[in-house]
Amino acid sequence: MRTLIIVSLIIIIGACTNGKTKPDAYGNFETDEVTVSAENSGKILFTGFNEGEKVTQGAVLVKTDTANLVLQRSQLDAQKESILAQKASLYAQIAVSDQQITNVQKDQVRIKKMLADGAATAKQMDDIDGQIALVDKQKKAYTAQISAIEKNAQAVEAQITVLNDRIGTSVVKAPISGVILEKYVETGELAVPGKPLYKMANLDKLILRVYISGTQLTQIKIGTPVKVMIDGNDGIKEMAGTVEWVSQEAEFTPKIIQTREERVKLVYAVKVSVQNDGTLKLGMPGEIKFQ
Image (cartoon, rainbow, N blue to C red):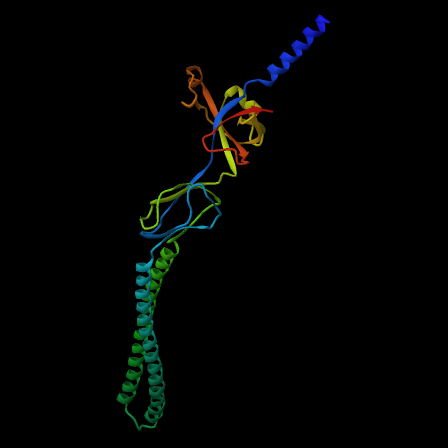
């Protein structure tokens, strides 16, 4: 009986020891954060969301005043219409020149016949040829002016396109679906190009960045499933994770590892992706265990 009790205690102690094995690596949860900045200057008319709110991709975050840009566009539209009106006038003059050439060519045919019959002089023939050449040159000059006007109209149209783009980007939208982490502006403030407006991130999947030694490299590769452990209300909570990235270069252990023995070691950074069920937070500590 005594022998049976001793064996039972050994089994229990062994089981407890196996359940308390140390994790293979430690780290903190992080994610790729996106800072949304203004592209135009102007008074902020609207701010859409507050910190902690979830937004979908394309949701309107900020609107800035575009009154000045709209006025500039109206001026350019009027300038373009004026330029195109000049073009229409030149086309009308070209039509007149074509008609003049047609009329003079009829006279040219008659003078040629008269010259053959001796009823006209060579000077009359030269004069009629000169008239045709002159009108043709005028026509070419009108065509050249039309080409210059078209280039001017294209330049104005390019300016209008730029203004339309600026007016469009005055409405700042969420580039991704995620959670607003920080809000930097309020309605009524002035936005300037490059000024941060919001910081957001997708928290549906977080990354646990851990550091492993060179001897542990052979145990994992990209796609390897691992066991992720975090502190829960009822003890350790386990979650499934997948190795997403392994550093190709060694580095000194980060300062977040406080013991002197650990800091002097060379380690490799590893990113483990974990599906967030709502319990994971940025900066939260975590552990992994190789399966």
